[in-house]
Image (cartoon, rainbow, N blue to C red; front, side):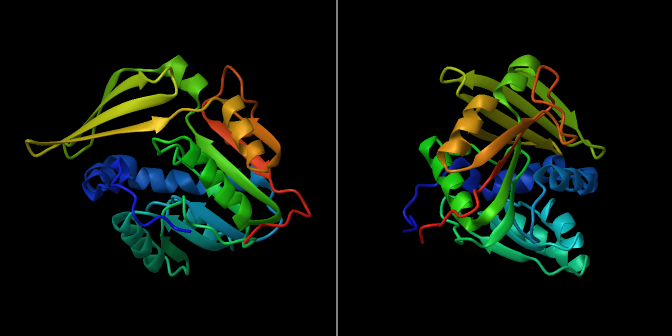
Length: 260
């Protein structure tokens, strides 16, 4: 049963996504996503052409998937981002299903051959058990032999490159100041973002749950995924000291029956 009484959480603030959109979703990021999706498909080796893009945002991966012949469902909780996705899909003359729903609620038993969770769109919730719920939902939504690919910043890499603060400036002079703090025994990172535009500053605070490769693999296996493999980049290199990202690929076993 869906929970319609959840309290407002940090990602429910539309102003956060609107103010940070130029930094998070530049045209260069959209262009780079095309190759990222192609690499993801090589790693996943999905057997069918039905795909779920979880936390799809403005369609950065959904649109390339559709161009490559997949039937795509993009799911996101934020209307602002889904409106951006619809605009881009219409401009490209692509038919993509966009669903406004929380990833803790979205389930379509045995509907997809491939599911993607990209760009660290996992670990948003204060209760880490809700991350387990998301994995369970994806497992149920995949067909037998379906594949789930997750891509994020792993705990090991963050420990190696951690910076307590950084600044990004756009050509129009807008600035994003990021301040970070590791909390709760390296289980979370607390972020404070300040967007400075035309002499006006807006602050947003949020945290993300952190997972090591082993922790993420165990969570996926506990949800039912098998043959879980870890990679350090989209080229498929090993998840080791030179890893750039944490990519996990798990499969739903053949013969699995999802409970509806």
